[in-house]
Amino acid sequence: MSLLSMLKGKGPSGFGYGSTAEEVTEGLDLSGKTYLVTGCNSGLGLETMRVLSLRGAHVIAAARTAEKAANAIAQVSANATPVACELSDPASVRACVENVKQTGRTLDAMICNAGIMALPKLETSHGYELQFFTNHVGHFILVTSLLDQLAEDGRVVIVSSAAHLQAPKETIEFDNLDGSKRYNSWRNYGQSKMANILFARHLSKKFEGTQRTANALHPGVIQTNLGRHMGGFVKMLLGVVSPLFLKSIPQGAATQCYVATHPSLADVSGEYFADCNIKKTRKDAKNDEIAEKLWAKSEEIIANV
Ligand SMILES: NC(=O)c1ccc[n+]([C@@H]2O[C@H](COP(=O)([O-])OP(=O)(O)OC[C@H]3O[C@@H](n4cnc5c(N)ncnc54)[C@H](OP(=O)(O)O)[C@@H]3O)[C@@H](O)[C@H]2O)c1
View 1 (tube, rainbow, N blue to C red):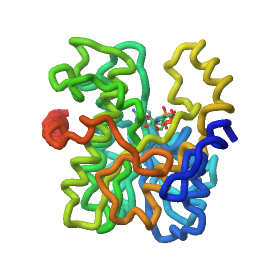
View 2: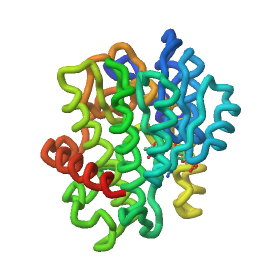
View 3: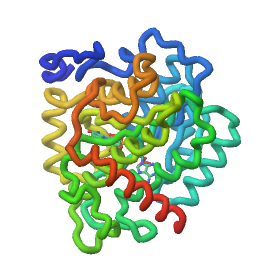
């Protein structure tokens, strides 16, 4: 247990920084329920799949390739169906949508967990900066194409990050979505994570009057493969401080498991969570005008890719 886990207490939900995915789902019987989890083969996604399955759920486990998904399922002995979903490739995401539809399963939640962080150099897909395209656009296609399959009381859970605080001052640089005017690895990661929150927020507006919910969250800071693009020194430093100051993977997966499953959140929508409690975002992450503009832009993008 890290030092911070010992020092930080629990919040109003009864859970907190140190809670694990197993703890927040303890006593829940998820048998008969189905959860779609992206990025199931590594870090927080793998632990999320393991714990949801442990509680009796069926997981539709998405990874870049079906082989990666199948290996991950075997690794944690999950009750799951593997699907390929390369989020930076709209054709792959759309094929995934068809595969999910073919399972005939109603989705109790979609957990948009996969992501990439801090790419050192500008990379693009279909003319859009790759972190924005992977972390936001790929999930936008997946979620909006599967809404017919979401349960009447289904939940959309978008794994964002406190890194949304580093998004550009314009919130989303609509005039620079290809990154050609300026690119900064962390600012652009922040923009993609800001887009995650705005997406959940606008989706929650669309869900008004229904039992469905959409929320975003920050999982904490956890040493996973996400840091693969960080320099050797930063990685080494993280390795040293990790046991003291960072969350473990079971703690990191807690907030998304909590938001996706906990009965107390049946009516909670349009919020941002961290440490299994509602937290404040940067002010502009609550700007409904920008959220609506991003939705319209995302629709325009996906109509052309
Ligand atoms: N770890 C942290 O400290 C932290 C902090 C804040 C937010 N988050 C967020 O938490 C989420 C999970 O991250 P993690 O820490 O568990 O990282 P991770 O271990 O690197 O897992 C990320 C997952 O996303 C998948 N992925 C990456 N690019 C993809 C693509 N183009 N198409 C489909 N899948 C793709 C990865 O697949 P491959 O293995 O095949 O690359 C992997 O399964 C991310 O959204 C991240 O932004 C993490």
